[in-house]
Length: 119
Image 1: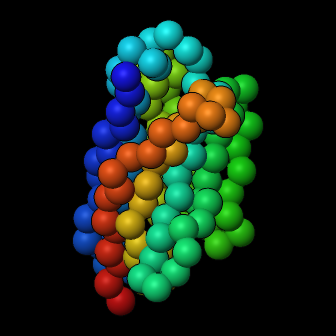
Image 2 (image 1 turned 60 degrees about the vertical axis):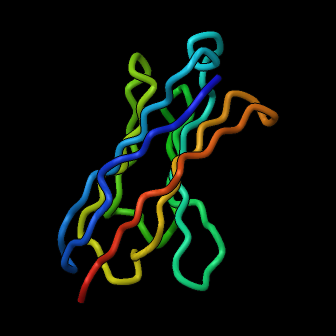
């Protein structure tokens, strides 16, 4: 029905940049409009946390720890969400997950992509 495919993770030195992408595909996304797209992350020994989100109207929100460094954007026509990460820090090291919501009950997760920032 629907799947999310993430790409763009990797290893980068502190101060560097990475861009994550997440494409939503499948019949469910061709049938219903996506309401929100977001990125979460889970660092070693930590709980999963919201990094950034964007709603269909374009409003965005960010975790305080990434404000001014990360930018979330989306291509509605392609059902794709991006996360531009600049000035990366070692504490940004985590598995990053894409999340797409059509409704509260129609909630999809990507498989996760590893981001490692070396000091």
